[in-house]
Image (cartoon, rainbow, N blue to C red):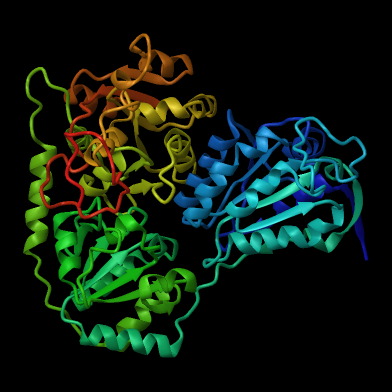
Length: 604
């Protein structure tokens, strides 16, 4: 057996560089890194060698520097989502805070079923110098390190305490990341002394490998059961989730809905699988849903979930569907397919739709399509309402202004606050024109996510909607995007606080407290110059005085080779639907059963 003598870290990098997807691309095209004592001497040395090709042949394996481990991982996750899980990024950290900074991002990837490879530095396997700098010591368990925090929030965890463990750990990691059912983040906790240990590796270990993403076919009995339910239904409605996009089933869904006259509603992850202009697209489902979609789902005798986790926002906390309505769930994982007592069809979305269409033959529902036109007219009216003199625009008016200058290549993206609900409700996406991280609703994802999304889809225009609260939480990757000349546009809506949660606080019976700056215990009200802040990191930054200014700045941004930040002040008063009556649905939020506020609403 021919062998190659390399350190464990060098072997890992060399192996990653030859793992390919079905399109002939590296499945992991590069790695984000912040170095510390726990990864610089081992992984850092290997990555430095990989930049010059002497470790990876004539095809260097790139390393990208970020500003924070969490936001580097957010960029990586957005890249994987933008590439529909066909590629993913790796992220490496030192031990201690470098690793624990990544835990939030790992949870985000886990909830959203997105691939991410975390290579976290760890303590000395030899334990010779214990406790090393930043080592977390468990008084009762000598095997514990800070990296054990990853175990609940990754799909696969492994601690590399000997070099040869990589021979099995690395293939297991890629197996998880390319599995449509179990797809999610992986953590390899790589002991820092082991990173630098030499080993004689089989040369065959470094042969290029193509990872095929399987497309599970439906079980014959499950397929026939679901086909029978559809044939018997008079008012079936589809809920389209992110699994439709990851399956590449967008055109298959469109053809299925058209052929069988079945209405389609959307989740946050599934939005834009069908363009809003598609006649069978009835809009967003659930708590932050469209009146047309929720009316259809409330009247449906059969609800067909495709590639969705059926989160509480989608189901109206399990109150949206009519009593007696049947539920079918098509999903690659049996866990998701069985939720809410659904009749399961465990299969790939595209394969399932193709097989179902054959089984149900000439079946056609008889949907009422009038509600769709009425809903879209209401959206247009709300988004195009002029801003009264002296008033600040609402989120709906900002969305309308951006929509008016958007193109078919524009992607609206966001993550947390008021905008996710407003965009799901109001943004009229082209196919593929929507990117929302809402499984974890993670503040701070937006700016880094916009960068990762642009890396995934450089031909598309990325418009990032972010509130001042999320921007303040995590904005440093704006500097990374400037340094790498990654252009995208940030629409920063400034309402002087956490406007979204402030509204929830009040509608659930509380008084305004600690969300808007005016309701905080502070000596001075802040006057934050977001334009100057963004400009200080090298971004093109402007203040839009009104919606016309906003539109002009958006068009100017298209000619830039670096990020643009457009700041516009907005009112914090309206809700996600901006007064669109009948749009939303019940959401089960805990409210105090006992309070002393005489003005609080009566408890039901």
